[in-house]
Amino acid sequence: MYPKIILKPGKEESLKRFHPWVFSGAIAGVEADGEAIEEGSKAVVYSAHRQFLGVGHTQVGGIAVRILSFTPCTIDEDFYRERIRQALRLRQNLGLIRPDNNTFRLVHGEGDFLPGLVVDIYGGTAVMQAHSPGMYLDRHLIARALETECGDFVSAVYDKSENTLPFKAAMDQKDGYLWQKERGKAPHEEAGRLVALENGIRFYPNWIEGQKTGFFIDQRENRALVERYAAGKRVLNMFCYTGGFSLYALRAGAKEVVSVDSSEKAIELTRKNVELNFGQKTAHKAVAEDAFDFLERDGKNFNLIILDPPAFAKHRNVVKQALQGYRRLNAIAFKNIAPEGIVFTFSCSQAVSSEDFRLAVFSAAAQSGRKVRILHQLTQPADHPVNIFHPEGEYLKGLVLAVE
Ligand code: SAH
Image 1: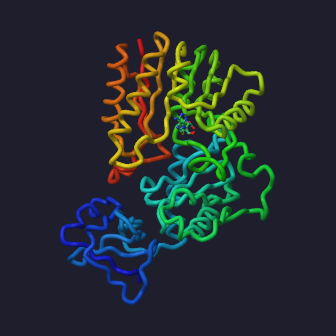
Image 2: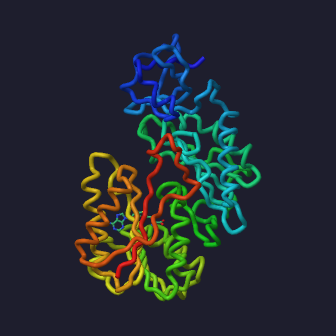
Image 3: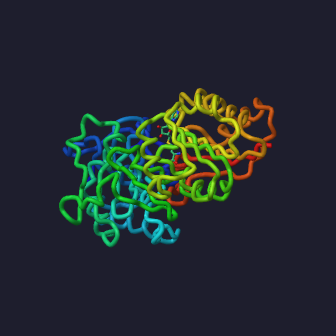
């Protein structure tokens, strides 16, 4: 039924170990039987000996196929329903769906056996993001599957693929909402007005204007750890975006919280979220400035510093520069932090390994001349699972450090 992709001899090994990517160099040829094979089409992959290997989405580029199933099947609404059901069961088992928590990642690409698809839940809104042309082309199937499987808590599905797809030009008009239970938006359901909950913290996710799907869900557990350390402290939250870490520090009873981000928009969102939780009179200050400049000049006398920069390495070939960036940033924090301070430091660059990141932080510590101990080694939470056959899915790493 689907066009056939035949691999070169020996190139089937990684697929037999359930790694879901076929690289373009592994392909010997295509047998399309008159059917057009276009970017995002479904195809069946066979070994050189005509052994079935998997069914997947094709795309142009280094990764030529992303495998959706290692057993023969049709990729239809039922297929997506089954995978989404499985993903939802995991989140239920994790205890993420509670009256005080309605924000979580429902689908994390390869980690949920749906390569190229991300779905984040903010209360009643599911925000999907396609990272592959095939997932984008299947967006209506996915929206229907979400409606059927999650309809008791989800009342709208929004597509936020416009900044993740490499084939932007080929995308047809932006759909926005793929499905809404009630036609036309109820005012409280609008992006930027809906109040979502994470561990009892309230915030406004904005899936239309915000980065990613509107909020950095992957820091939920690390924020809760900040809460354990923040009571009575002077806290500096660098690269705050919508202020997630600051909100937890304020709830813990920090003496003072300063949030810094170079984006004015992010600072405005942080202020709104602080006010939503704690009103106008708080020990919070938000500053729109470059993090390196602020930290160098005003970073002294804080007891707890959070460093959560954007991915410094977006590609493998810039890893070296990225590591220098991490080293420089951490070195300023170590130099300036108050005695017996705590640093939460993160890297979300997939291309930077945890060993390399730790080495960069080590260099920074050595450069500062201060004694540094590792208290916690952090990673992404369980609603961002890593498929063991696809280690590329691991991206977030963090260290909690005690600086003498
Ligand atoms: N810690 C945040 C997520 C950080 S995302 C959270 O928990 O939600 C990275 C942020 O860094 C973005 O908001 C971006 O605007 C900001 N940023 C990027 N470069 C910066 C710089 N040089 N100085 C300060 N902020 C910067």
